[in-house]
Length: 316
Image (cartoon, rainbow, N blue to C red; front, side, top):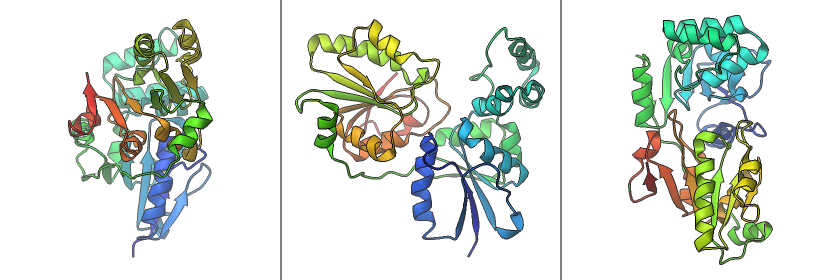
């Protein structure tokens, strides 16, 4: 039976992939012997394993996974088609400007290199959306696992020629106390409750959703919204809420353990899972919401466009 080295952050890391991996390990370990590598500072002896499986996402929690995937190539689970934030974290954030410039040169064209020089001069911010920074990892990976056809197409477009397995993101029906969590929130059973879940980044259309809520409360004054996730530094959520006069209608709950996360999902009537642009990510919170029978609204883009039209409301 093949022995597998499994690389991923795990809870309490503030990464949705950490929760995903915890669940996957519980099931995969029943089929295969696994050794888990969940933090930096560990060294893989490839002779001890038949396969290394790397869970790679575009955030700092995956830096150790990325480095090991380059040192000892294996099967890479690409959760996103863009790793620019991750590369910036392991270069710019550590004052390694030469390393960042080298990565831009390796991945980009002359115009990207010229732009990187402006980044280094602190004239502009990194071109996070324009340059995916995946080339080095794709060249080293023996095979890929992705969760959508969108990601298959993106990986081919970015030059990966090896095997790609498209395995849909796992879905499950969580057990949660809907009314208990509504009581915890102080929300009346008859009040509409809308939720946005996960890392609160601007591309998740937070500002647009709050402005829509302001219009809604004029028609339904009891409507409430919860934002469950850590706010991105670039998104001044509370200031935005206050400026829209929504202090009495919106609560920012921050990062929560997965058990509470699911409970707050259960408490909601409607879940918003919007984003623009997308880098091919799949959403565990979306699948949990569907498993709980929630009305869900998604952006008609990327992997989300692949859901059947009668499963969720798609907007563009």
